[in-house]
Amino acid sequence: MDRFWLKSYPPGVPADIDPSVYPTIVSLLEESFQKFRDRKAYVCMDKAITFGELDALSNALAAWLQGRGLKKGARVAIMMPNVLQYPVAVAAVLRAGFVAVNVNPLYTARELEHQLGDSGAEAVIVLENFASTLQQALAGGKHPIQHIVVAAMGDLMGFPKGLIVNFVVRRLRKMVPAWSLPGHTPFKAAISTGRSMGYARPKLQPDDVAVLQYTGGTTGVAKGATLLHRTIVANLLASEAWMQPGLKRKQLSGQFTIVCALPLYHVFAFITCGLLGMRTGALNILIPNPRDMKGTVAELAKYRINIFPGVNTLFNGLANQPDFARLDFSQLAISNGGGMAVQEAVAKKWLAITGCPIVEGYGLSETSAGVTCNPTDSEAYTGSIGLPLPNVEIRILDDQGQDVPMGEAGEIAIRGPQVMQGYWQRADETALVMTPDGFFKSGDIGEMDARGYIRIVDRKKDMIVVSGFKVFPNEIEAVVANHPGVLECAVVGVPDKASGEAVTLFVVRKDPALTKEALAAYCAEQFTGYKRPKIIEFRDDLPKTNVGKILRRELRDSVLKKVA
Image 1 (tube, rainbow, N blue to C red):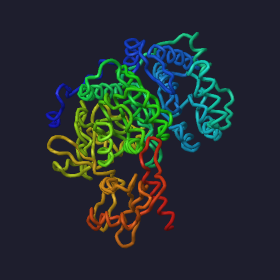
Image 2 (cartoon, rainbow, N blue to C red):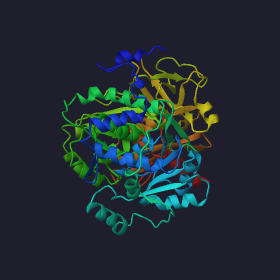
Image 3 (tube, helix red, strand yellow):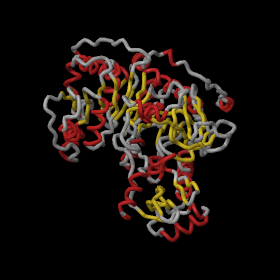
Image 4 (cartoon, one colour):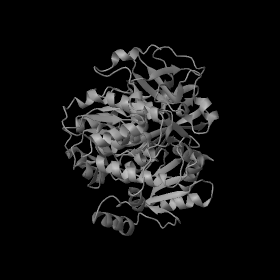
């Protein structure tokens, strides 16, 4: 197809990347382990591990996993927040020839039971803080788990810090509920045993499965996006090329840092922070609990910040922390927004504080993270999700699967080496989202302009229809977020006898004096009649996924329960 958007590429960014230069993720990572051996790779709570240590630790854990008798391609679940053990576990699973299954550590037992059973995971590596949930999930017996590795927060912190951290986490903060997992192996014991075992390099191929990345579950039953080694390598190399213009903005020297406040099990952070950080020899600053905004700011104050991936809610929360503006942003070269729409009000405030514009991108679990992004040397918020990345083809389709005219809204469809093989063992679900010529139908509604820039209009399923008129929640939210008395907001549609659906607005107030009447008057000035919220509700907070995406479905359900 005619990739006319290539003429809009920043100078020096190639149209295509050859992912075959690295047959697998393992070959790519092992090159970095050797190339950057003495550099710090990850730091968490002031404790760092080098690339060389990451190499040795993951090699030992890989040998231990192989010693359990697991066959090539076995699925191994990883259930951890942003701690040092996470990158060790991921590298170990891949190096052993197995498939990494990323698991949200905040899952309920029901959600975890589904994912373990659906993926067919035979082993799981879990932080003890969440071992109680695993115990409950395994109680039903609907799983093939044979091996359990349990890590403690302080395992890689050294002596005596590790002991102190574990004592505080277990005894003082009471963050480890009682658990019992008979036959489990402690993380440190697995590493120790693995050091004396022989590691057998597996014969991996580019088309072997590397990761099962489960969709967030906010749209129904969670499904595993099957990501191959070549799929992830293609995304990593394209992302690396795309960020080069942004890094040149500040003429950075030496090793650069990446803030990893997004959870590593999520595809955005998994690629952008975890794997891309290792690929480029960066130092990843791990933030285990980014919801502790004050603590996050205190942690960031210790480092020179160069790259800051985030979602709108994270940028907004930090920008509203008084101490955040006191940090040194002189070396911040790229602020990369994704996961959800970046609101203009948040982008403006972030730019005013940091001097670094939020460069918005777009991707999904099914596309192994990013497939579009604004040029990383952009000087301002654009309101778009940018241009297709190298190797990526984008079409905007109508409901019949035909291309819509330039500038009109339709479903964003994506083709390229970054796209998943399909949903794990769900051929029926895969068929629903893939076109005969290999385009993945994202379920997102977007528009593409003559330069190739794409603007997200909304999620197809979140669109509200009021008396036959289409209302897109993102538009309402973006305008309401500009009100000085609003901290956060979300919009959903609920059934209405008169109009079919009614626009319902949920708001977290920044100004406690803000009234529904004042907000309604503001909306009346900003929107035509059918777009104006019919219902306004104030909340102390909004339900979110662990990555910070607002759960519109939960808000919608809460309204429906009231009227039922």
